[in-house]
Length: 110
Image (cartoon, rainbow, N blue to C red; front, side, top):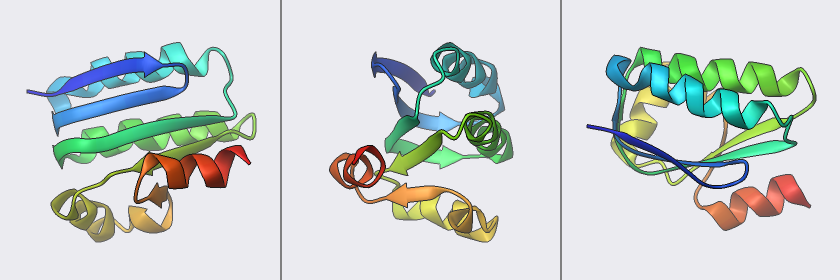
């Protein structure tokens, strides 16, 4: 079971398996954040153990919506097994992926 939390503005924490059963909740969480047209959304994936194509599609949709107003999506804390999924789909070339939150904020906020 996955959890999606929004502990701070423009910041989501994902945990567990992000799959079809969680896609609607993830889209809803993104929708709430995107309404405010943030310059960046930071996604903590430290606790994600698996992500399927529907979870990846949610991330892609959020990134595309952000780009319409020049916003950026930052992913960080991705474990090796989840990173492999991004690499197989070649999405590691599309997303801005950082090792940790500090790196993501330093790059996107400054």
